[in-house]
Amino acid sequence: MIHAIKIQPPYFDDVISGKKQFEIRLNDREYQEGDYLALNEWEQTSSVGGHYTGRSCLVYVDYILYGAKLGIGLDEDYCIMGIKPCGVYNRQDGICEHMVSPPNWNKPMLLENPIIQEGECNANDIKTKI
Image 1 (cartoon, helix red, strand yellow):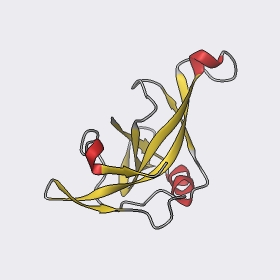
Image 2 (tube, helix red, strand yellow):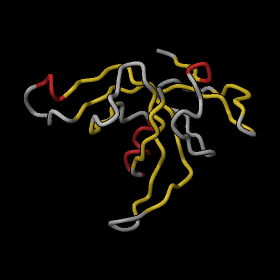
Image 3 (cartoon, one colour):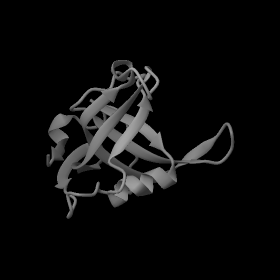
Image 4 (cartoon, rainbow, N blue to C red):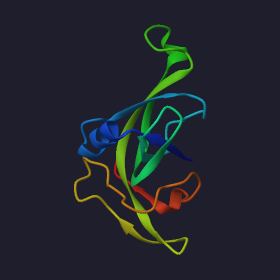
């Protein structure tokens, strides 16, 4: 499953640089190991609004620590996900046409266009190196 989620610029930059290799989220989507996160950079411009910057990346969830199982330190409704970089096919005219792989598998590949939406690509469209 691909979960499309918003991420603020400083955190997005840390994911792209390879520095941030985890994501903490409210577990309102029943995240599972083996899922993908489509991280779409979101610039918050006011308390009620903002806009997508156009930058996206796709990461693989290889580990999850659920707050409910931890018992201390993390609210039971939250989870911490270990994330790894992956490649994705470029989309043109709604069709996944060719694979783009990061030259350095230690960092996620920056996708300038388009913003990744949930369900846009299926598991056959994604390449991971784990």
